[in-house]
Image (tube, rainbow, N blue to C red):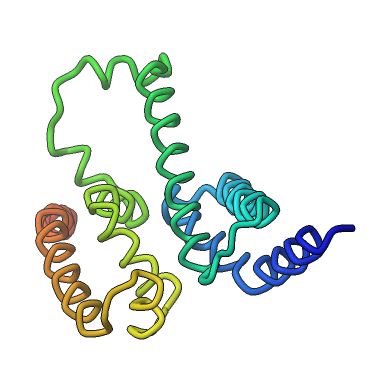
Length: 186
């Protein structure tokens, strides 16, 4: 076995053990909690990493490389899912699609649906920061290394992210509060 392949095999095993779970969690949030696809994309990202090493490429920081690769693969998967969803409308939903939208649907949403809608409104960078900080519970230093920015910049972006999430959440909270008050008056 060649030295390049031996080294690539060793680094792949090491990366899989160190970062496999982190990448699955990252993909899980990017794919709006689709566990099977998250696992598939993590493995695909590892495969890209492995092929690059077999080609003789030196990857000094494997975690940022794997995150970026997984992020790109998640974007592609979400695009495919969106295109498929746009082409397919279940018969039961046909009347909802044809009917005008009203706010009564929003008042019936549960917590997970609201969370998914809010996360879908974040930019790619905001969503990545959200996942690293609040899902994976990473420190500012770890996030700064992964994103290639200073810890102070991470802190500032986290502060801005909280403001963005608050602005996005306020209308949903108002709808929820109106629903609770309405149910209480019954």
